[in-house]
Picture (cartoon, rainbow, N blue to C red):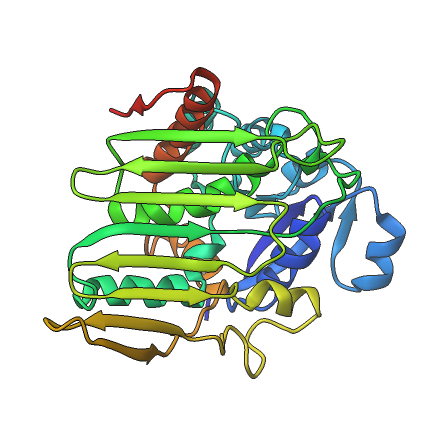
Length: 347
């Protein structure tokens, strides 16, 4: 049995603490070797077998570290990824991969030069509802899709003192939740022909984007991604309409809530979403038929397992280089569309 791959985690805020550390620790074949954070005392109380470092260079210089996971503020993603690659480490970057296409291309160039993997943490490819939607599309249950609506709404009227909610490079909902929803559409439908986006600051005292509504234009259908911060009433997470049926799904995947509660990945009930979707069909007489569609189980550990396999030369990472660049192109084009008030074509 091969030895566990040793991973260093840079950043121990929400992403590092809630998502990355538990997933690394509970994915077979991986071990959390080091954490880079200023929270030294907290980490030493929490971990007994993890090295705590104050600066990223310490893990770049450590020959025991096989890969570096970057869970810092977004403007640090590309510089840290390039430095890690130049030190000979594989890299997994929390979304977004970088701030723009040029930075993403620089990271990928550094990966090619080093002969190492650089990929993106897109955990919501393994949401229960998204996996279920993929299955419905693959087996033709919905027929040819006309509209796909994906929402990630919240009710957070107070602007918090977090870098994600302030104005700055890579901050705001478009760079926070946008990568999740856009990546899911890329997986389902590929690159659209164009994008039309509306980005706004709606909350009193807000400075960072806290609302977006973007339409992805495909030859025969539209994909709409939406997120708001002032949505108290529950909205459908997905609403997908085809020429055979519609599928409606409410509620977010349970894994984030489980991680926040301290549930260990893989524990009983892990990734099981009890809020099943509904398939709605109409016959020739407009008689409506409704049926429950059981969710497939979700498991974010699959992304780390695929990263481990790729590092061992036994497979590919979840997010390809092409997909990572396409997402950055969508984010950039969406910003341009909102700024200039027009539909932006995509190559």
